[in-house]
Length: 262
Image (cartoon, rainbow, N blue to C red; front, side, top):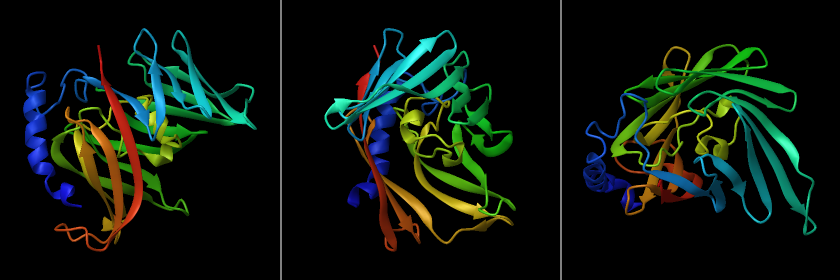
């Protein structure tokens, strides 16, 4: 738990390392987000591979693998898995239309169609699923300040608001991702849905109608490699007094590996 409280010291080292490439707290004002020097090679033990163009070519392991097939601005993601030691037939899982930045503007899967709108800096701002708005994101200073959803009865809009550490999100880990977009974490880490925050997420908390905060807060703890990339992300959830983790319970955990972009 101590590592959570020494993040400020780690941040100072990481910011110095990044300064030679970006003098504005890791921000790239022309394209949004940060200038990426590293790309993800695994999430929770499943590997990402890349083609000669630097696009994701596959994601998986020796039990399940997804392949990415590009045709112009179209992307088809196919999935296959092992059954009784034999590979299944490959099926089409997702069909996407990509914009010039390589971000999905339309996603088809099953009987669903999701359309996604982005701002000029490559952050997604709104998503519509099957004709109805399902989520939105608020961006401030190249950080995802909040993302929204309707409550369970679809009566009012809620927001999950975020706070950030003074540390550059070197690999652009997608910790604060809009779950109501309906896509999985590996898809966000494959950078299919735009840029994410330039700083490392500290907390997020639901705020209800009337600007009423939820009682519990999600608080994040990290481990980093020598380049400042996140190698482990641990989520705690509960009542947080902003001085320690008393009252918080373990909720979730993810691991990452990275490689330098050539």
